[in-house]
Length: 254
Image (cartoon, rainbow, N blue to C red):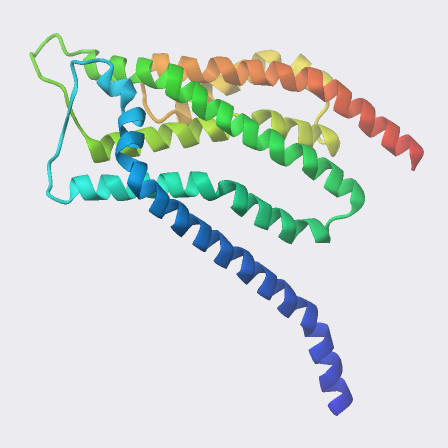
């Protein structure tokens, strides 16, 4: 009986080690976000002034405050946003160190490529959104259809911040399309030839996807999202030929 209990304890030991390692990851991530948020508190005003440029550059839209708590809540949200951004390298490093020991050598090789590429694509999508799509979308939404009744455009800081973060995250996630397609090609579910033959259907699917996931219902914003998505689709086809060739080589060596 004692021997059996000892065997069970030894079998549960790796699981407990994984739980402790995961707890360490979460604790370090929480502390890094908290420290980043404290730093963000001191630069949150300047950060919000920069994030608000798509609105302030129009000079015909003014920010207003509708509740006594709104300025403080906006400052806290911006500080948290900065905290997450500053702590992201630490969080990714902790996740990386937690996952990497469980992977085989060939799996690690692909992870070294996928993770940095995914981060760069997310940043690229968010940057395209902030510098190109957002100014056009705000101008269209605020002034389209306003000729019938004269009105003065006002925007609350809270609503704008939520609107901005929704836009940035949506575009960042949409730009993960090449990663998804190349993984499907690598595991053999898709082929670059199939993607090339289905271009017409891909265009239709991209337009529908842009209409569904776009934070706003206006056509200019949806087109500005659909255009880069189709370009990424074409890039995925050409990169897919390299991935498919490598997959055939690996299968031939087995």
